[in-house]
Image (cartoon, rainbow, N blue to C red; front, side, top):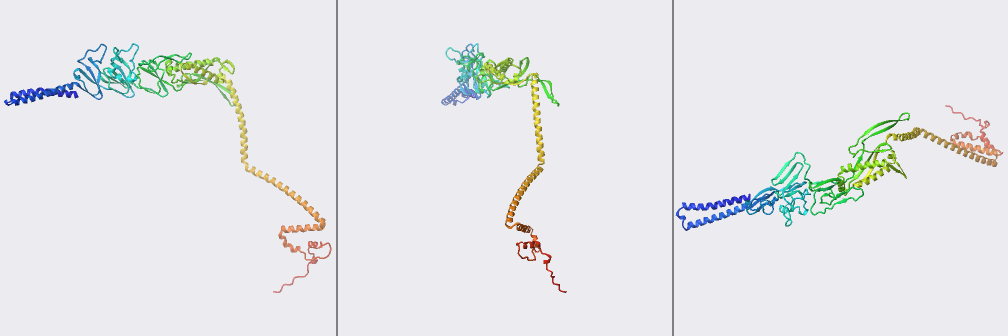
Length: 620
């Protein structure tokens, strides 16, 4: 736009510069004689000066319009020289020394001044290359040094030169006199990471592959092709998730790399593979740790290896026969045979291992825990492949072979080595399991795998071999059940007795108290009898002593008097009878002194009663 304005101004100035002299000439021919003379000459001189200035300004504007190029903020100016240069050397497409044709130099966004560039060059304003996040751009160079015959992609550029290689002048420049261009033509190993790049689209062609579209930047500009079906070959970031590592297989060799092969591991009878350092062609010995990586998928194939612990089970795939034992009401053992197919579960790695022991086919289920360490991941991928190939080519055949060899040969029991029996899968399970685990671990180590654990599942022993043992166990269990039932009956009787005792607890307590009371009464009576005996004995001794002092008769009377006084003390109501007990006659006289007491005890006699009558009552 700016150059167009300069050109328009230049054309207008030149037109005025041409028209002014013509106008002066016409005026002088048609005008009065006053225009002649000194005044006319001065006016003509002024018009000529103005015309010269306009002519000069017009030339300057035309020159500026032909030399100024304005490039938009999202564009890059591409030059194709038409005049003024020599022919392009054979085999070259982009000119770096001023030759005619597509130029290596580009014009950046903004205003650029190049003398008469619009007269000698065609200018194409092409879009700036923009790479969205999560993707990268594939680069293809139209010019450069030819690639060697053994290469499929150009050498990658070192990280410190990756920015400069995008400059076409540097890419096609000579490293030294007589040497070819620095860059190689064809598909480039280096890629464009997310960002905006002012590339020379005459030299570079950039392609971005997304699931629903393909975006292309080339000399025709920006082209977008949409796809109805999602694409599989994408130019997207390579993500290594947690719990995985990425094993890199490179198709190119980076510049300045020492690519001597390394063979690992150095173990007898182990697989041998060639590993190379990072940046070399082949399988890199150092895997990619979890993260996101911008790598050219055409140059590098990344295999994700799950380094977490893997559980592979071998189950199902056989017919399970059973002999069921039942006990009828009479206590007799009955048996019946059944057959049931056992399918292979969807999550299982394969069917159970079929081993042959003593002529019997025994399906053996097992579980193995396998892990690929990050250090061994490149070796495993180079020698075997991914987890699917590891399972199909290494683990499954190895486990089947080891299990069949161990179970079908001999076993060491204590210090004796003998042929393996079918029932050893039950009785000597730990010994067989340990032996198989050790051998499987040794074989897996040769392929770079680590077997953490191997455990047997169900051993499907032929039921005919287990009938006798099961009948013996069932009989023993019946005997134990009978014993337990007998004990239970005895406990039930004790419980019933305890319940009945609890129900009669009040009567029992009452009877128990009565027994205790009777026992205490008996003891009390015994004590009272003993006390009475002792009392009587003491009393008898006292009476005997009294009789010895007073004499038998006086002692007897004294005891009688004591009885009377005791009776009166116990029964005071007898005092009212005292008048009858007091004698009305005074007895005196000599004797032994007991006559008074005898008279009192004898009471009044009829002769002692007075015969006088009471006085008569007065008349009314």
